[in-house]
Image (cartoon, rainbow, N blue to C red; front, side, top):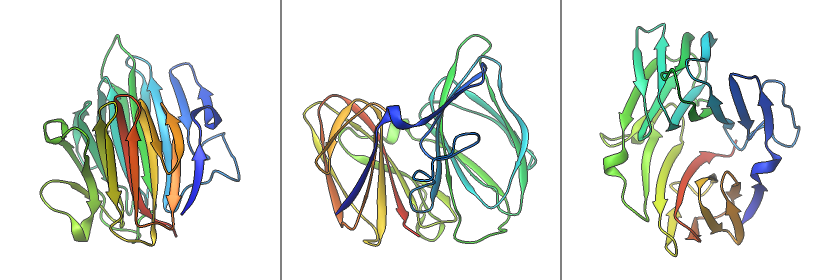
Length: 238
């Protein structure tokens, strides 16, 4: 088993006034040659957006984009005529494919919103752009991971899908509980991100917003030291 630990305080940071951003990997004005991604995972941004502010219309292409709201609500509008609001408990996927434009604005006029946004390199370029979102909060079971995003060729009615052999899993674990995850493909790696709480994974103690990359293993075990909320991504390593 190989591991790499990314502590929360080692992330790139930026404060634009309306946006306070934390970059797990090189992004925008933050560049770290040792943090350019993990496998096909290229972006994991932890964004805090001021009331009524956000990202105006901007383009994307050939990237699978997953957005997970943690607090507040986010207004989405795109060139495919989707105009939606996403809230905590929901997950949004967008295949930029051959190209699209979209905007993301805090839906509240008085409260900050916090989102995680992740970008994954697709296994096929120039696909038709697409958008989807789904509420998962009622499907969550304590001390177990729930797959919220899976590959297109392995998708079912329970999860959203992307154009990549990637699996996004969310889990709520109570203090003193343990959990495990069996990889779908042993050539893949795992990127575990602690949204809230504190856990031990692969022999490492991790707290809020810490992360660990793990590869060359078939499964991992997790012990939760406090009530914890976790994001676990299984992804191809090349």
